[in-house]
Each structure stands twice: as C-alpha cells, then as structure tokens.
Image 1 (spheres, rainbow, N blue to C red):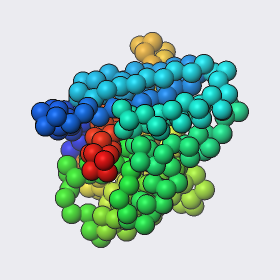
Image 2 (tube, protein in one colour):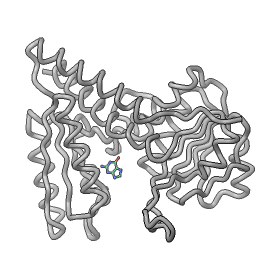
Image 3 (spheres, helix red, strand yellow):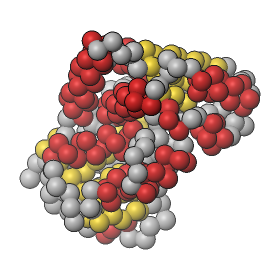
Length: 292
Ligand code: GUN
C-alpha cells in the first residue's frame, strides 16, 4: 500500500484564498481591514524566518501587518508595555508574540498579558480553558491546521482511536482536546510512555509532535492509519550532497508504505499554521465588529 500524501501547501493556499475573499467582502461592505501585530524579541534566525512569512502572508490576504522587533536586551517590562499598547490599539485584531522569548523573560507572564479577545495564538489560559470546556475561543493554530488536514481525508472521526505523541501546550494538549471534541478516543503519549511503538500501533490517527527527527518508524503504524507529522527538524548538511535536510518526527519513506494517508515535511502541517493564524485574525475582527 502507498499512502495518500496530504498536500498541506495546497490546502493552506485554499484556506488563504477563502480568507482573502472574506477580507475583500468586508471591505466592500465598508468594514475595516483586519490587523495582525507580530512581536519578535531578539534575533533567533528561525523565528525571523517565521515572522517574515507571517507578515508577507498577512499582507497578501489584504490584512494590515504590524511588525514589532525588540532587541534581545529588551526587558520583560518593555515587552509588557508593547503588549499593553497593542491591546489598546483598535487597528490590531490579533497579537502574536513569537516564541521562544530570550532567556530571563517569563513567557507565561507575557502571554497572560495579551487580552484574550486578541490572543490569536490561543495561548492565554482563558482560551486554553475555553477549549477544554468546549466553549468558543481562540484555538492554537497548529492543531487547528491539523484538524483541517484530517477533514480533507476523513469527514467522520467518531470512535476512531487517536494517539497524540507529545504533550506541549502549543500542540499536544490542544490537539487532544480538538480530537476529543470530534468524538475520537484519545491517548496522549510522551517521552515517558512505556511501550510507545505498541501504543502507536493502536492509532487510527497518529499525531507526532515530539521534535525528534524520524523517531516514529513505519513498523510503529497500524496499516491504513492517518499520520500527521508536526515535527520540523533541521538535520546537519549531508556529507554527500552538502545540503541541509528538513525532516519530520516520522520516518516518512517507511511510513508511507504502511499508512493510509500522511503529511510530508516540508509541505504538510507547516503551511497550515500561518493560514490558521490568518483565519483566527479574521474571526477576531468579525467578533470585534459585533461587539462594537
Ligand atoms: N513558535 C513556534 N510556533 C509558534 C506559534 O505557533 N506561535 C508563536 N507565538 N510562537 C511560535
């Protein structure tokens, strides 16, 4: 068997096209452009790449992009002051503080300072709590993207056994909540799980979000399983080709021979994250209009 490859790049482009049309329709009705503020502290190269991509795609769908860069020497108070200004700015519908923050900054304190109505990352305790209770709120973008990718291959997930490997606040925990809301039977596995290959082999849906290159092998999969690979791991340059390689948490070439459907890395889950961030920003603008 060869798995269906889930084309995240194409699905993300379709989501962005829907958002672009919705933003254009808003403007035609005389409503303002949604605005997204992104805060980057320091000069982490990977974060710089993400922040640039976010700003570019925000503008491409017709929204306003506000990019704020603070030096690595910025204090926690500097960041909190900027967040307070963005909270009060009527042109800003969404605020994203890029993680990781430099050492010495209390990231949780910064995330808690973002007003929950503009927390398009869904990291504020109020939004995390809302998700756990099944109440409307902002859902973190990567798990939201995963749900959209799942919907592209299977509409009814009721009763399926989903195994989420990884228990981060950004991916693993919210992913488990969303799968539960879709009536899956959910197992949360992590680095301390005993007999992880056997646990994974029970999965109809496997979500890998551990950050360990190619840890999940083909032999760990149930034949026909749907595999979502959230990992983005940069391997050092190959001795032969001299090229650096990007791999997921799943050994793709092995897994595609066993799985029913699988996301590639790159071009799977990754592109969906920014598309869902723009979706959350549009939702925020629509909510602010209704509240006005
Ligand atoms: N760093 C890596 N992923 C994310 C994300 O989804 N949001 C933020 N704010 N920072 C990140």
